[in-house]
Length: 349
Ligand code: DAH
Image (cartoon, rainbow, N blue to C red; front, side, top):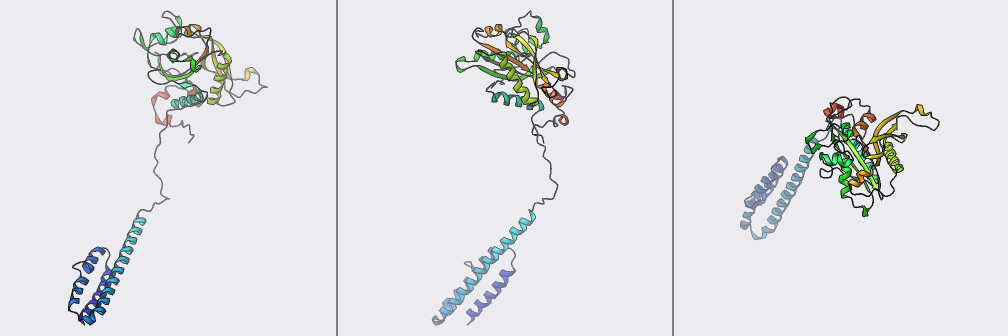
């Protein structure tokens, strides 16, 4: 019977073709099993098969279809696996290859110091005031000087040579005006005012190793009932030990600022202070100015100095960074030389 023969030979050639194919499994499937495929066409001859033979021929036909279908799907799986293996092989990462270095930036060294100071004071429950509205760099003469107890004819104005924009508007020479700006807004029914104000300040100085026409300050102020010099000393000791290490001590020397009375200059000990040490063996370095806020300042800001007392301080992150890292020229901080700046990485890597 020739249809049976034809079916068997189709099975043989189909097996060979499927085994031989490398890629187009789908075309092969359509060519063999599709509507106009070879098997389909052969089976159309069924109608001419004698009825008693149809069962046998039908079974053979089914067997051929079964065989081809199975082979096709096995082949398809094999091809896909091979493709996947090839892809994996081509995408393998060679872990022994040298990596390419991505340079990760970091905050400027002064910003790092300011961040440390902020974190410390936030921990002590202080507010950080650094936005342009509450801590403007373009200030009025009134806030920068008069409210800080430096009236127009005050000789201490000469301590700070000023960039004036108009006779009444200037680039702030200190962050102290933020004291008044904060006091004005503070609601004492909610408790004492405890704030720091980090920011840029400007002086008409000629730049040299220790002077820059623009530098940084962090102002601090606490206003409440029964605030004393001991509170000031404790606060300053805590920030100094945070920045320079536990072994450092501070001392206060009398000084003069128009907005504080008494005023002090604060020194930090550079070497470790031990109880058996002679005073002359301690190295002191001056780090900041501070004091008990002058009653005039409180009064000008609408605070009753009989009821409230206050301390304030002004510290210089630039000077801290110089001391901490042994930098001998303040201008280095403002040149933005990455070789210099990349040395200061607070994560220590
Ligand atoms: N404003 C002062 C300056 O620029 C620094 C300063 C000293 C601030 C004493 C204060 C203070 O709040 O109490 O030189």
